[in-house]
Every structure is written in structure tokens, then in C-alpha cells.
Length: 280
Ligand SMILES: Nc1ncnc2c1ncn2[C@@H]1O[C@H](COP(=O)(O)OP(=O)(O)OP(=O)(O)O)[C@@H](O)[C@H]1O
Ligand SMILES: [Mg+2]
Image (cartoon, rainbow, N blue to C red; front, top):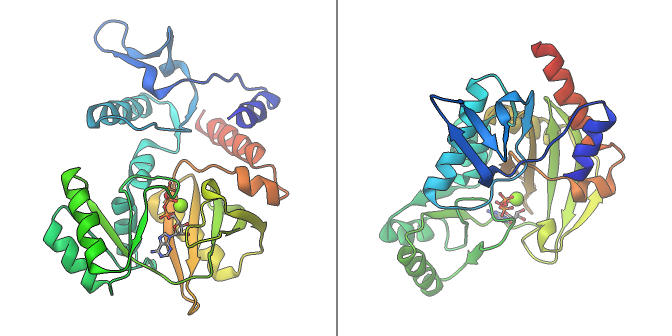
């Protein structure tokens, strides 16, 4: 966050940081979205960098607030509709699959019996994912019916939605591609000690040169979701098939910055400032 703020300041922009959990909306009199005593309606651009967990009401209020700001002319990066699509694994997967992009077979349901049936249908080797992003945490691989029963019953008690995805055998590595404004700014190979290759779980980033098909798929995934910038996860199976696993609409770039030459924060600042100039 500081790197990003610094990159904007270096380019002459005035920067503030606001917590999305600290918004107050006023309608009628003194209309605006306030954070502390400042109205965010006066900002030229807002970069959404994190949406902490909360109740359904809290999350909806925050997203509504972003939509209102966008409607009133503030440039949102990524736009709220993109944030909504990408924080939700079902929404993302369905948009990718509908556009014909390769995603592992996936079943999403609220129903325990449907989940058990899907477990069998998906070959009794599935990854059960929380619907909303988790940096790899809370994601379990289930490979036998008894465990499936226990896990699914526990999810049922918590009134969770089942997101079951066929496990794709791979070499404990995947690709993270950083897309900005319709081009690839950088990419890294993430090598893990297990099938989860999240940097947050200890996977190591490595520099990589993408094959043309990998670059094209990442660009297409970001385009399908309408993302101005995105971190696209690509997974190659042991058989050599390439899948889009997910598209992050609030991507980080810490691991990426360690292994690639480009100044990612600087690229983002340049892009946003150019977009703003184009809107005036
Ligand atoms: N179907 C799958 N088959 C094999 N490995 C998978 C599969 N789905 C996910 N993984 C592994 O688990 C990691 C995390 O999965 P995913 O990217 O879907 O969620 P996440 O990183 O927790 O979500 P977010 O980035 O939104 O926090 C992937 O990078 C990959 O290494
Ligand atoms: Mg991921």
C-alpha cells in the first residue's frame, strides 16, 4: 500500500488512505460518502485495495457505497462490479466457463445430498473451497466418501455454500500473471511444498517467461471479467492442460515484485493517471 501511495506521490498526485469499514453515507442534506470528515466524492480515483470480511449487511453496504461513488463520477479501480465478480469464486468460474475458457469441472450447491453426488461425479477427488477468497486457507482436498460426509455436514451446520472443484494433479506449482490495462506486466511461477501454491502459505516465487498461450489465456480471463487489473492464476496439469483457476480483482504483487524487473506500483500509478487524464 505504501509503495503504491509513494508511486502516485512521485507523480505529483495527492494521496489519502481510507478504510472501507469506516464509511458514512449521507443522502438528502450534505450528500456524500464520508470517511472521517472527508467526502470521498471529491476524489478523482479510488483504488480498492482490500475488503475485510464482515456480515452480509456490512459487505453489501460497502459495495453499494462503491457503486454510488462510481455513479457520481469517481474513477474506481477496479470497478465495483469487477470486485464483486472476482471475490466470489462461483461468479468468477461461471463467467470464465461461459466464455469458453478452460476451468476445472466445478459444482456449487447449498444442498448436502447434491454435494455428495457431486463428490462422486467429480471422481472422488475434489478441492472444497470457501466461496470468498481465502489466500489458500480453509481450502481442503477431499479424497474419500467418509471425509466428504464429515466435511460437508460441518459446512451444512455453518450454512455454507459448497464449492467443489475437481482436483487437477499438478507439480506443486502454478502461474500468477499480473494483467494491467489489457497487457501482461509481469508473471511468476509459484512453487509450493504441497498442492497449494499460495505465497501466503509459503510457496516461493520464481521468475518465468510465459508461453504465448499462457499470456493469451491470462489476458482473456481478465477481459472476460472486465478487470482493469487482475492477478490471474493459471494451473498446468501433469497432462499438460492449462486451466484458469481464479482471477483476483484486488491483486497483490509482493512475491511478483521480488522476481520481476518492472516496478508494478509505478505501472499502476502510470495507468490510473493516464486513464484519469483521458476522462477529463
Ligand atoms: N482444482 C484444483 N486442483 C489442484 N490444485 C488447486 C485447485 N484449486 C486450487 N488449487 C491450488 O490451491 C491454490 C489456491 O486456490 P485458489 O487460487 O482457487 O484460491 P485462493 O488463492 O485461496 O483464493 P484467493 O486468491 O481469492 O484468496 C491454487 O493456487 C492452487 O495451487
Ligand atoms: Mg489464488
